[in-house]
Image (cartoon, rainbow, N blue to C red; front, side):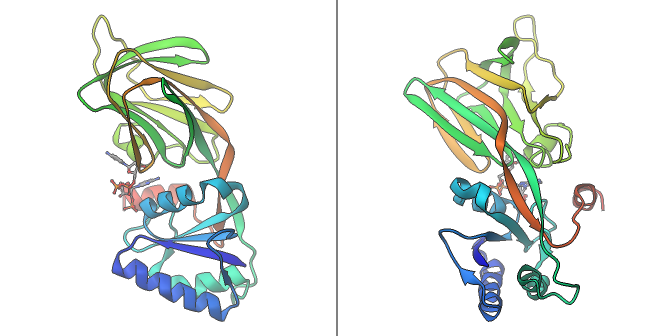
Length: 267
Ligand code: NAP
């Protein structure tokens, strides 16, 4: 088994990373930074976002496993004191039986950003946001090539199902089970008056729909794709849709989404 480990950089995560390498070496696992089959993220959900973007070009050829060193994470299901058990599971040497990993696949968001200076493509694990640098933004939102609304306000957040528990949740968006292939559009403080009318409610678009966002004036914008920020002053439009690609997580034991929601936000 070829593996790679990415950690958050704090002392506990670095220590766990070193412990993981020792356990893995003893089990004959092969450290491979270029073509790993499994990428272990040690830290929090933010660390998983970094791991995801580090291996974005090989996303269909590997699976992720998350170890959390803080509170329970949405992408990180193993605790610090469970590393030996995790390595045993990964090598199929667990007492619980040589259980093969169940590969769970989550939908991703695909973006095509059209600027006067060129076009770029991105994939998001959590979300894409568009916000103003100098003040409110003015954008037109089309759904499936039909004008839907004219938006003025702080910005817009378009999230994946697994990202629905992150920024989207703070905006009053719904939490969406990751088996539902959809993207969610949530407003960030829209202004509603006679000129600018927005729906006000988050919208869920299915996989075969797409949404275009058009910049309606000269404006300095901040685009974010997960933890990455891109300042842009010549945006023409952004096309968003559910990607054909998916991210894979290796599960060696059940980790139900609604249990994670409950233990993260309620108990
Ligand atoms: P950060 O500002 O350092 O951390 C944002 C928080 O979001 C962390 O507590 C992180 O958990 C948590 N998080 C990340 N993905 C999550 C998910 N899918 N479900 C639930 N919680 C999640 O930034 P960062 O660590 O680089 O993460 C970037 C993310 O921050 C963005 O993708 C966005 O979702 C989120 N964000 C949220 C808000 C908001 O809620 N108002 C505003 C901006 C950005 P860990 O502590 O486990 O890493």
